Each structure stands twice: as C-alpha cells, then as structure tokens.
Image (tube, rainbow, N blue to C red; front, top):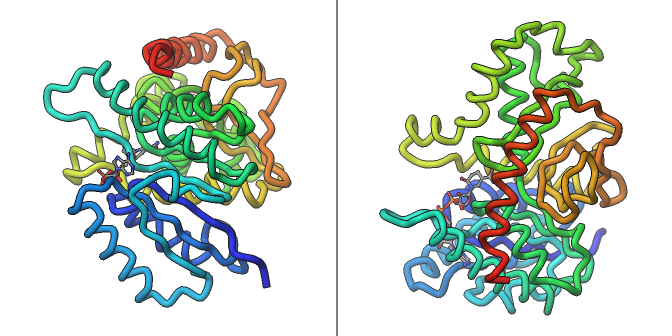
Length: 327
Ligand code: NAX
C-alpha cells in the first residue's frame, strides 16, 4: 500500500474547511488508494482552536481507512512541516468599514507569513492551492515569499468559476454538464474573470454555434458566472462553501492525477503566454500530466476576448501593485 502524503489545510475550522476535509480524508482528492495525514491550521484564538478540535473529533468518528493521522496547529511553521499539498483556505474577510487597501494589507500579512513558512519547512515539491480571497493576489504573495520553492508550485483557485460556467452552459443547451469540454476561464477570481466557451464542445460538437447567441454570452452568461458568488450569498445568507470545497478537490485531484487531455482552469503564474506578463497569477486553460500543468497554447484571441482579458489583467496588475511594497 502507498505511503501517506501530508496535506495541510488552513482555515480548517471554517465553512469551506467543513465541506473539504471529509472529502480529502475519504480519498476523493488524491485517490481511493492514497492515505493522507491532515495538518490543520487555524488562528491561535481559543474559539477557533476549539472549533478545530470539534472538527477533528468528527473526522475521527468517520473512521476513514485512508486517514493516517490528524494534527491541529496554530503556527504555519509546524502546520506546513514536510507537507506535500497545501490548501490555503483561511483568509481575512472584509470587515465593516474596511477599505480594499486594508483588506489587501491584512491578507498580504497572512500570505507573506505562510509563504515564508512553506519556503522554510514544506516538501520541495509541495503543491499549493490558494482559495482564500483575493485568491490570485494571495497566491502571488505566497509565491513571492517562497523564493526557494518553484514558482509553478503556487496556484490560485479559478475552478469554481470554471464549474459555474459549465453548469450555465449545460442549463442553456439542455446537455449533461459532464459532456462539456474545452471551457476556459481567463484572469482573476473576481467578477472580471472571462469565462470563454468559444472553443467548448459537447460530445465533440461545438458549443458556440449550438448556443448561437452573442447577446446571451455578453449580457446573461458572463454576468451570471461573474456574480454567482454574490447570488449565493443573497440566497443562502452565507458564501459558497460546498461548491468552493468541491472546486478545490477538483483542482488538486486534476493537478495530482492528470486530466487525460481534458482542459481545466487553474490560476497559475504566467509564463508570458497570451501576452500576460510573467508571474501574474492568472486563470488559464491547462491540461495536466504527471503532476505538471501545461497552458493550452495557440488559441485565437478575438477582439471581444482581448478586451475582457485586458480588463481582468488590469484589475490583477492593480492588486499586485498594491501589495508590492509589502513583499
Ligand atoms: P470562514 O470565515 O468560514 O472560515 C475561514 C477560517 O479561516 C476561519 O475559521 C478563520 O479562523 C480561519 N483563518 C483566518 N485567518 C487565518 C490564518 N491566518 N491562518 C489560519 N486560519 C485562518 O470562511 P470560508 O467560507 O471558509 O471561506 C474561506 C475563504 O475562501 C474566504 O477568503 C473566501 O472569500 C474564500 N472563497 C474563495 C473562493 C474561490 O473561488 N477562490 C470561493 C469561495 C470563498 O468565497
């Protein structure tokens, strides 16, 4: 049987953590034959640490055969020790009266500390997924704070946007969501992201002529996907948690186990492809194989798509410039 791998999760007592940990421990992320040791991080605050204890009791009570160990931590330097996978979910939410600059600064503080800790103690092959918002910029900060780790090991979660786009297309076409391939979501995990179905297929058939409604694309599809998070808050009174956890599982599973040629969206440090400046943490269509992702190359970018990409890039550049002095 396989040797256990170490999976660190931050914000482990939060909403997403509660929807995520049980699925990791049951083998949905890394495979039904891969034992895992969970290294859970929460803030030192007594309430958070107590809540974490409760989650750990429940994990124990599931008697998951693949769960080879569970640790509770309040310090990233111990939580990230030798970790093979790190899901950075915990972040500072925007409080009442908090300006965007304050939010960026509070998160820059968290993600510089966590990036340095990963740099110091994690496995040299650690695969990092940042979920906590602003996810792309937080991932960028962690990457820049970990100069001894390969930059390509730092990623941000765009998969929820990708899955949301797939579900809207399934609803519009009346086709099963699982049959949709070659979707792409470009840019920032924010309402500016550009969900792009120009290349998408359903059972090999092109989606764009099937929908054949540019007005729907611009005025219904893009705003629906872009504002889905807000719609869920309005309906549920809480932000997306189960769907976010599901997207995190999808992202890590596909990165670790491969996509067999299928496209998925990951926020990754740009290598300059499609004119996105190097190192900008940007959503790209990728395929994965042997634990490595590769950007899908050679896609034509038409005028409308370029306009959308420029807009989300401008927002990201602005966010990343806003934290540069803190790195
Ligand atoms: P919760 O507030 O329920 O949980 C967050 C947890 O993180 C809390 O228990 C808190 O104590 C902990 N935490 C805060 N700072 C920490 C630190 N420095 N170290 C360790 N733990 C820390 O939020 P939840 O609903 O779970 O959402 C978590 C994050 O995901 C938020 O930033 C949220 O905005 C973001 N999201 C990102 C999405 C994406 O697609 N990238 C979608 C869903 C979600 O909105």
